[in-house]
Image (cartoon, rainbow, N blue to C red; front, side):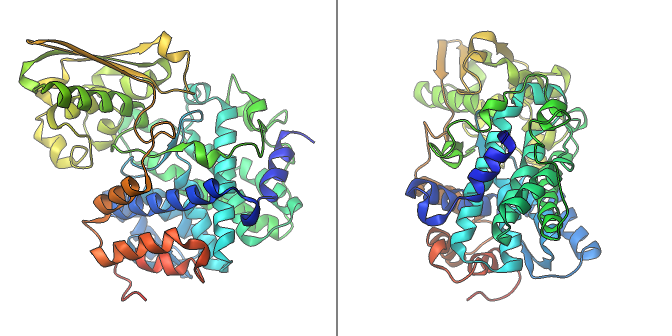
Length: 462
């Protein structure tokens, strides 16, 4: 067997009872975070487009949309829920594969679970399997090469993950799961061209991945076939989407560790490449009582891979025209961290962007790709910041941003983050119930005991 079949065999055999407690716990941890991010993102302008699309264009069905009183079939629910959750750049992330797993894994899992009502323990199995796939395929594709080719790994690798989550929920055989995986490979797509214009298409990528994965599983369930070597084959994913792939990473230490335990939370509302520098700026400002008016220069160093995403082209990064531009500007993220000692949703909003208050500092921010920091990337997302002031120079280095598994948020910190995110859209009692039900997911009768709470405006909740 090749590496595709090694991976298929591994995820097909994942069972709740044989999973380590840490992996089961992380499935619920990241599910709660997904709901928090998606609920807050329901207010975004692009999210309203998804809601209107489903209302006007999609068939009715049993699957709920997070943040709205709308139901549709599983593929369209996954499309909308993935697209909505990716709108505010606060969804979870990985280091090695430089992608966001939850926004394809959770929507595909939840939609299929609502449509087919499996034991919630199978939902946990599907989530863990989805993270195994999207992260391992992402590790192998080599994010630097993948980005340079113009692809967004959240969308491409997420398509494979969604085909597996759907297959797990449907209870497909190993052969059918393999076919779904092969079919998914012909649907993997996501262009980084949005960086040039600040358009919304990045937000579509995980939704389309979740949608495509479900379609692949449904086709396979009906007997449709797909290539059994879609990852490593002559015309397969690694060959077509990377100039420097590492196929061995797909099956590296299968069963010895779990990718879901290697995944990180994003505390700040900006691209993950910006998080280390933001952490450092906030820390240096607090520890040394640095105020923006005394700053003469800020020097920021990040791994070279980050440059094409958040440093260049410099004219866009120092003059963001819209929220997407701002989310992918290291200059902007550092500026707001200096000004506000935070980089949250308020700082990455249309109103704050229009205020131009950041203009007083952004030209003082100098950002560089560093060859030394690149040496340990993507295993470590290091950052180095130097702030030059009238009182002297303050400098800091960080190996891993806050939220990384090596610098994690506790459950209490995650629940606090969930409440902060959902406070503007949910009452306290509903927030409490979602936390309780997600944490006891395996004991519920159905995933609907959670999704009914997240469908804002649907009615009274049991």
